[in-house]
Image (cartoon, rainbow, N blue to C red):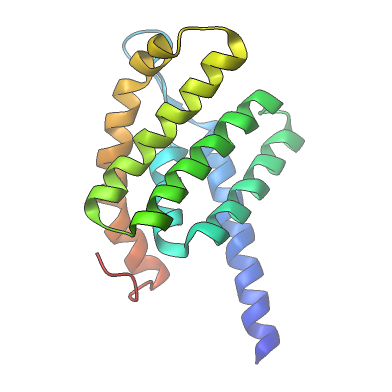
Length: 161
């Protein structure tokens, strides 16, 4: 019985990693160039809320490895993604899973990622954050809408929200 549980956990982790990697490859275009939105952000927040910080980081590392192996991500992309994951997952891990933390964790992760990206590229972080504002709104709204659905699908009934 213990083996079945481990196999199930590994399968769920692998499946969510692939889904996160594939979602990270798709971007919705914005009206202004540079304001595209990555579809993986609200999905990532929901993974962190449903499965917890530790499992979310494992899933994120595997997703980044997949994207690196496929050549769709560079070290800079992985760095920014991991900053997002640490901040968004950290907010949920520290402050708990509530509608407010679900809504703000993704945008806070994006702000942190843009600050680091600004440092790496020598670009104004404020300009990067301004370009990301439409996506941050979409992430906040999308996360709040997706969470109850994901919670029900994965059977995470022990999560109070």
